[in-house]
Length: 275
Image 1 (cartoon, one colour):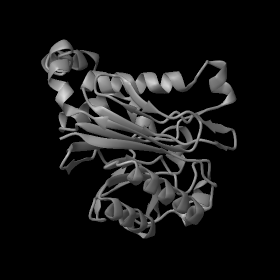
Image 2 (cartoon, rainbow, N blue to C red; image 1 turned 135 degrees about the vertical axis):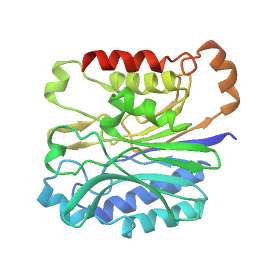
Image 3 (spheres, one colour; image 1 turned 90 degrees about the vertical axis):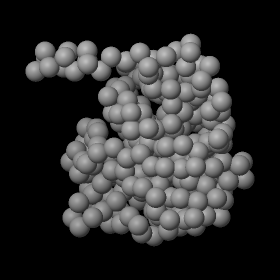
């Protein structure tokens, strides 16, 4: 069954959770007006990213909680699935979380980021493992930002049956990154490769704007399972949509049978040799 996918790209006000949530809800409505049925929002979009643990903890919420209830109401209103990136607290622990809301407004899944980058390790606890959830359009795998750099993790989501990957991210550049010509082209290159090698549709929702020394790269995109950039934004806040056309996958698989031609036994032996 074909489905319209949407990536939401947004700026936010670091530390102003109510204003950021209101902005996210407005953009979810825009995705609904465009006919989207599976929607992805950025990483930590209700709080901001460049915050200390002491600044972030009071802004973090439980899951389920106020933010997921509000997003769930929007999901119910439009009959859509929505993944939103947020800071989650459980006791004294903080998690970088992606919460998935179902078309009836209920909490469908929760993924806690497993690959923590740089200073994130001083703020967040590591999640316990991958999450794939069921929809009537296929199985959906959750990713947060840095996760997509690791091909083993993305391959694992595919092996768990994911047909679509939702990537909530806050992909940035800095002055140091600029010295190495880091740009949105590299961000898209990784996404296109993961889509191509796993034959999955990828929705990547990035932030725009700046926080301290971090400049978000925008360029949120939807990538077809054959590696084509089906839709993308530039640096503006907004929504892009594209249809996931599953009828095109069988003929493409004949051209690019990457999944079928894997040789797991060889890879296991190679890994054993390096231990």
